[in-house]
Length: 159
Ligand SMILES: [Cu+2]
Image (cartoon, rainbow, N blue to C red; front, side, top):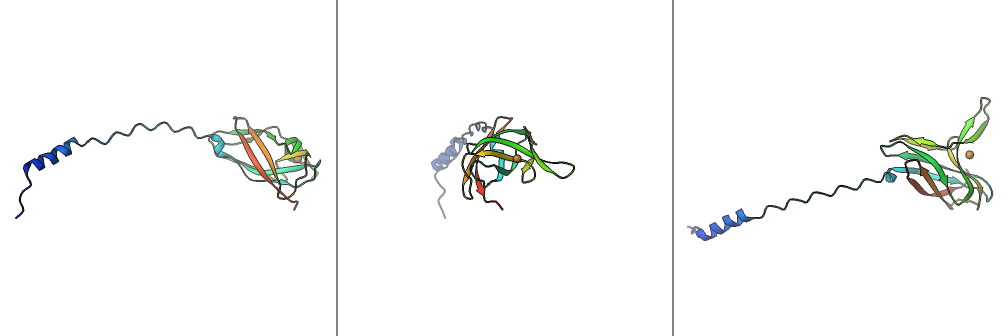
């Protein structure tokens, strides 16, 4: 038969239990920093067309706005060309294609806009250097809400 534990031990255990510190209340979590909306603006699948120095090239991508705020592309910048313009392709009634400058391109909240051959594109005019397959072009896209997307765009040879 086992001897009962001495009372002192029981008292100690009980006291220890009672005195066990409450788990410290977790300090209130600091408010999460606001998620930078730039993180959810993106230009997916960007590429530029190969072209000789002094020529013209175009950059294509899919502009995605993962934020809850509509935004607008207001400018494109690069050092690779003397002039950069956002263009849209037009087609006249008799099927002639042309291009005109699109000052602003709205990208709806949670939406996307395709910049693709035959549609919107970023036109690089008077290239300062030739663009060959394997080169890259640094392109900055400025948005009305204040964000800038900095892209390193690969050059694709003409297909
Ligand atoms: Cu164009």
